[in-house]
Image (tube, rainbow, N blue to C red):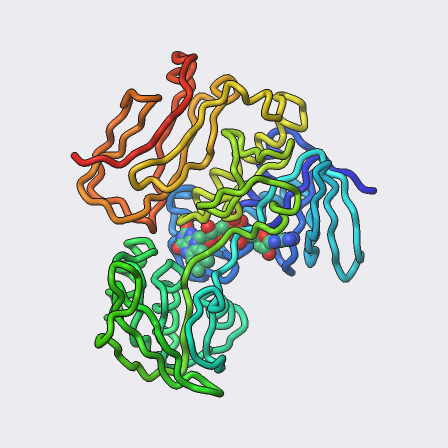
Length: 424
Ligand SMILES: Cc1cc2nc3c(=O)[nH]c(=O)nc-3n(C[C@H](O)[C@H](O)[C@H](O)COP(=O)(O)OP(=O)(O)OC[C@H]3O[C@@H](n4cnc5c(N)ncnc54)[C@H](O)[C@@H]3O)c2cc1C
């Protein structure tokens, strides 16, 4: 059986940055496993710009952003295998892969970095009544068809869901000559970034109907139209608000879910909120030497944060391989629990061990509603230690706070850090 110090699963921006960081931290034997025919992950189909403003202080397209990390991986001569799907990871870190070229192969890893990204929620998960006509696509599939394979999914389009992919595709389909009639969003707020609403809908005069959903799909062979309706606070359609919209295409942009089959299979504890692994401040899961980063951990808004987080996972995996810290719950007995309350849905990480952390730790989270003129508060047990005024916070945008090691070491009795939203 071949053995590597670190095996990275997924060759998207998270996997690439993690592998590069592991090499920069002195690890020689690194292997990236990617099921696709090229490195770069979802970025290869994101040909719009807007990537890398934080990391490179430039506006890059998705492929350009990915190319910078691919170049680094190649410069560092990090080994990678394409067209290779990981089908299993055992708790003692034997990674099983399958590929046309090599068949079934087992690889022994010193540490594993999970970087498998996320997948789109499907129509099945929504239970929209109607037949199963042609013309219904997830927004990401439509993006791949248009941007990578040169096919146009349709001409008259309705988009359900206002996540970033839906917003980006509203603009893309318009630029390709389609008429995007409406973007319907179940929630009273958009799930996407504000800048995407402005640049992808407002600039093209595409209406966004909040608190609306598709209640029926018309057409047997091909979509002929959809019926949308307003929904009440309970999320149920309001009788009398139905509107029939003729169209030949329905794009679904109704959420992303971490690819968690491999994580679940190896016994990683998953968060019921993010559906991704529960991790400590090192981004290590409950399984010794198994780390997670990127969209497989929690769905990110900006790829820059993916790269930042993955760099940390790569560095910590390198420290693990060198035996610089011990894993396991007994080593984390002194850990402080991190949690969200009053609208803060979750935190990544979920615990922090002050003795092991770096000088600072960025804790990322999302809020569950739109909050205006509020205060983001951090509590150390019952004591409020920080109040940050926020004009607006929305579920589509990731938020963060930064913890300092010296502050935590100064409070050896501290058990819990809570992040809350409060009124001004
Ligand atoms: C439509 C769209 C628009 C976006 N727009 C922006 C934007 O404007 N600006 C911005 O900053 N960010 C944007 N993002 C977000 C950004 O692209 C993601 O945050 C980032 O790509 C996530 O990186 P990742 O490596 O975690 O996941 P991915 O890029 O999804 O990579 C995961 C990789 O793992 C591989 N994989 C999965 N399972 C296995 C397995 N079992 N075996 C082997 N390989 C496996 C996959 O094939 C894939 O290559 C956008 C995302 C989308 C989808």
